[in-house]
Image (tube, rainbow, N blue to C red):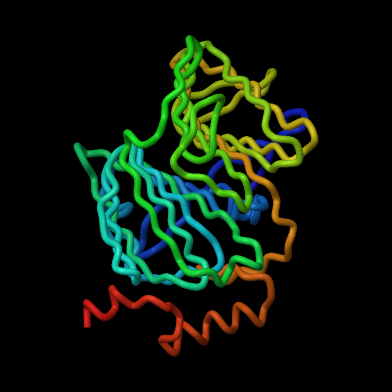
Length: 289
């Protein structure tokens, strides 16, 4: 896949891939052009008005060694897991799940008013936390603060922006994560923390950075010392998710839904799953048996 360069940033177009039981997602991080972007492991964007693209959903599957953040723009996502958690994410709501030592869950998307759009971001865990007890949190739309200016409207999903604080904090990688709507012809300027890896993914409208045109479904990657986003929206405005995190700087060994540090740890995860020793809390499994 071709990538372009914008001064110190890279521009990576999303690639359509099939996941789960046949769900089409637009993938950037975790794809061929950007396998890992420490501490971020994967960024998937679900966006379709065709139920055949996602109706089969993501039946029961395991995770170990990382956290996931799921954010819905439109439509619904039904969740159920091995800790006994179940719920439905609606428009604007989000889920933070620390898989850590192991969790088995299902995610089943549904249209609402003919629409389905959302994101899932995988965030790595350091080696000392990969075998922690799993954790799960779910948040309604109004849990996240909004910052409005004449140029943009920003929703704080993780961390903080100015004086606005999200209910979700990641102390391990100090991730910040925003949903930003930029008004037509207006600018969004943001300086990321020094030494962080940062990105912006445009999922509505277009814009430009300097003289470089930014189209829909484009990931802008900042992994240099000049960690500054200066984005100007096009005539119809633009919307993007923006994130930044502190690199963990440890070896990454991944195999499907397992992300560890060594091949031996991956082999152990696979054996644990195959022998039904994967999760510590089996509330869902027991209830279903």
